Image 1 (tube, rainbow, N blue to C red):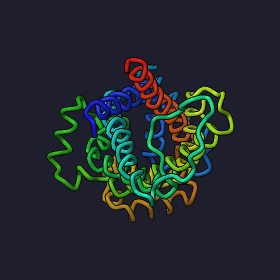
Image 2: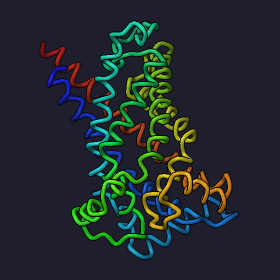
Image 3: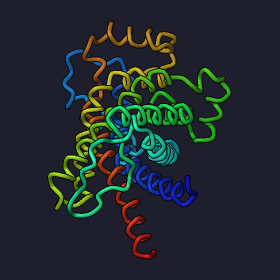
Length: 305
């Protein structure tokens, strides 16, 4: 694995993580605020979102919608950079295996559209899930702090103070919500990579004259939407476990049971439209920036060589 390639992937991933975090923080904030409560049976989703937005703006002004941005950057910039880099190089390793190597070798007639390794469906599923869960384990403490900064249930004054507060509570608190995060992230990442690569491959072949950025954006948006809806219940459970301090929200099963008792099936989809919007937009921004930067570097190296 060449150091230059690692640096390029980390830079591209960090840039995409930064752009997504800053632009889309209000959606993350609203999702957390809606998921943290017990909900109101029968409330319309649009009404809940509007009331939550109004309350935040009334209390803290428009800038209040960006509360927790620094914590999000602390989690997402290294998180996206490490995830995309590890995913790319894991796929490169797996591509050497005849079991995971892609069988469809069709290429665009209009030149290269991607510089990423190509795998079979099984390979993409395993690579996506493995990379996402590994990075999730490494950065779970930062995910916990991010969720609590976005919540109104904690009065943290600084990132350092919040991290030290969590650390003092021990390893179990640092890993709080990790099981739910893994059950959300593994299928999400696996499904996303499978759908993204499949759509991108077909679009590149069927529409060779379309700009690579357009293909990457549409493929990422579609993959993000499908993977989000399939895994959203685990996101609700994860958020409640990380921001609620009551004993009944400390375990995965007890949290799921509490949501079911209070709201039924609908309770597992609180904030779904917000997460859907955020994931679609972050997928478009993230993968378009990531692949776009790598393509520019690749073309620059070719011209310079």
